[in-house]
Image (cartoon, rainbow, N blue to C red):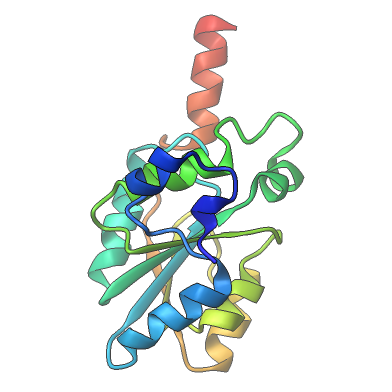
Length: 172
């Protein structure tokens, strides 16, 4: 079942370019890339910024299709606190689906994408440079099936938290 039926308005389904899938449907959809490289990245993507866009463009260049796993609203709250996310998950998914470099989106409820990665088994997992590649929970599962981790250098001073702080300073 397609995720756009979960709280999206009818017009939103068209705007989403049919890029948002539940995990089961996405797993089937990715079978068409069995001879290619599936690239995966994940994050909250709350308040999309240039660092996100550069990460996604880099990730897309690493293979044949790019899957983005977005933390659900509940997951973001557990990770970042009760005031987050600023942008609801369906809005975040729609904004990301408008980017040409994005092929597929899945929303996950866990704190880490380990279960999603276990189900999809992407060839390459891209993380931002602000993460220690050896210590992230997904590194172990990626290496267990022969996948590869790639790092994208952190775009200094460009983070959702920095944007929120600047808004609060200017308008709070």
